[in-house]
Image 1 (cartoon, rainbow, N blue to C red):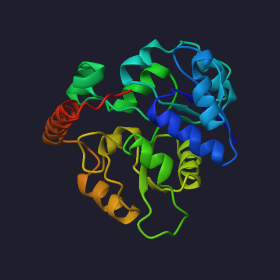
Image 2: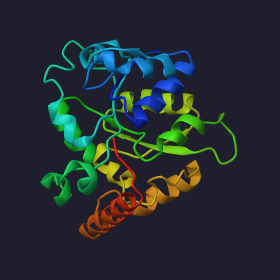
Image 3: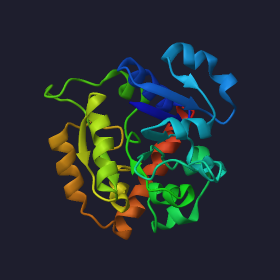
Length: 241
């Protein structure tokens, strides 16, 4: 499969390692140009290209850049890319450490990925945002392995979501349908599934327990949990990309 990755940070690099190891053709881009990705190319086997080239290479495209940088992507990034090519969004909102406050996300009117979708002008599927990059790279296991980590997948296009769920399974994780993109708040930072590496049955139960419509109380708790987590990360010297 041909896969384009836009973003060469922690998640983008982890995906490049895993996907090339499985025999996929991976093009990868960052904001600084292909010439800055020589070391990553040597490590992963991915081919450094521009963002536009990565978008045109993919049977699946992964956008994995800091949320605040999404509006800076080229307006014609997906020009000529067939409408049935799924676009994966892995973004998380870190207002204290990286992104600054975005009113639409603070209010709870939009989920992170709905905001991304508006800026990209393309439907997106949300996945890979709630797992640590090292675990994504190292902890995939064969189907049926007891305790295999599951990953929630949210999106509005059923066909695109099925293609993405198949990719998740190929990488060694159980794909759990997390409903529409508007329901993707259930896998964002500040929720119990974030970084928890839950097996599928536990994740399904957890998602169902939250309901489908986020209440004001749930959103307030999410923001409080998110702020506390970011402050802890800051105290530990953790840097975000």
